[in-house]
Length: 156
Image (tube, rainbow, N blue to C red):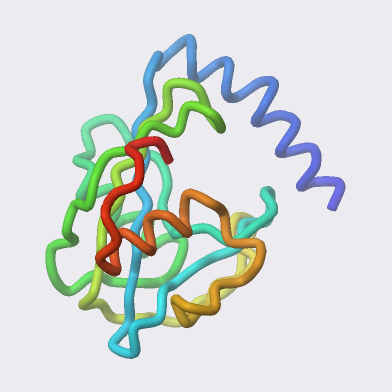
């Protein structure tokens, strides 16, 4: 618990300002992973409250597609078996100024063994009509859009 609070504090007051200086803008990915039963994959981080779509930052020299695939493997032990579909690119300015998130939809994939670790505490598939109460607002909006709702906003 103390490590989680320390990481959040360091992230907010040290890492985020440093990223602003060296990057100006940041780009990340999130993926709406839907299984053959129509359930969506969500995860809980060790350092932030709530349930999120899997994803993370794009590294230098990496495409957003490669980053999405890498993050799914690293965070959720998911190997994508078809090219993910880009749903949109969203501004995440309220949470992390200058941040943009490319959101993908994945329907064909293989799951490998998952072990909770330092970054991911838990992951599970949920019925899209019964998401956990702590599912973040941005994740809820992107899931609805992946299921056919019109895009409500290009703000995460």
